[in-house]
Image (cartoon, rainbow, N blue to C red; front, side, top):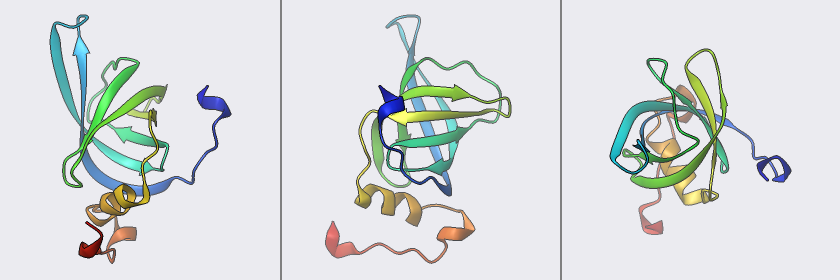
Length: 118
């Protein structure tokens, strides 16, 4: 299903994020901190400090940009503690702008938000 969808251009970014998922069926809710290093409207690359095993589905939160509970599907796990995920819904341009404004990546240093659009 995800292989047939159109791809959007990935952009470098650096945002703190958190993933949430259930462990042991529905008994425990676990969360892990990560960094979003590349993002597009339909997918992202997440970097972790340590190697971890992730479930196939989880939620992604980007607290600085105030974006909560983006449903994600794990697509690929890399050897350098990064994973590639696909979103269950497309991010709109307003959410992408908010992510880039709060990014610490040098490419997004001069981005600003239009407060009238909120």
